[in-house]
Image 1 (cartoon, rainbow, N blue to C red):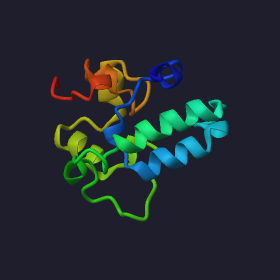
Image 2 (image 1 turned 45 degrees about the horizontal axis):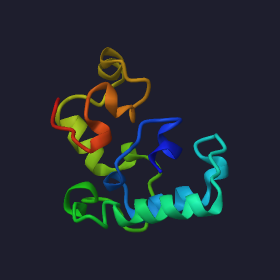
Image 3 (image 1 turned 90 degrees about the horizontal axis):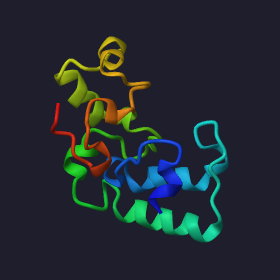
Length: 125
């Protein structure tokens, strides 16, 4: 199942977004950040079930990841979360210069700074 997502980008841990975000992404895979990432119905259901069950509001980490997020918002990127901004501003790392220095291609390129990002470990900075 991980191959479907990691074929094109880093495998983001499901706990980094709320279930509503994952559901919205799965519902619009034909336009997944400008690419067609459609899956057959059975695979899409398996991926959706996993993502929503392990989402930020499904695994008990909502106090950290979802703090400050308006419940009506459906963020499509982890970099849209108040938690992400707080964490990176606190460390002085929300800036194109710092991202470029680490080799990040975009703000959500977690592996550039966090070697174990796909495993959900971000303590290595």
